[in-house]
Image (tube, rainbow, N blue to C red; front, side):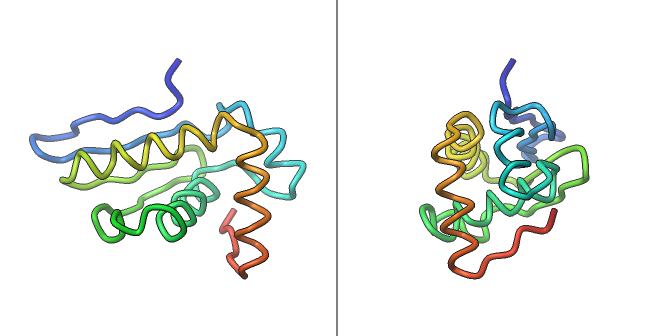
Amino acid sequence: MTLLRLIETTPGQYSLLLDAGTTPVDDLVEDLGHEPNGYFWEGVAQVLVSTEAQTLEGRFAYDPEGGMFCAHGTDRSALEELGARMHVVATDGERMRRLITEAEASGFEFDD
């Protein structure tokens, strides 16, 4: 199963989706004091954009729920890049640990 799905909701409108609670790093996220819900994953996306992919800033919007992360917009390539970056974090425990630790050290607060 693919963790992140990019779908075309209407012609020219795309959504990047992640079902919360389905990633290999969920237990680690909980061990680090967070709930791996849609709002937490929005925080992950925000950290990735602000620290690694500033060119993605403003090219899509977030609309998470407790059970699902969602980013959406008309820029398919921006959502594809975000999805690729999030997939790495969602499947690599050390990468997730580093992201959370560095984000919290810089004052970022995850809204989970």
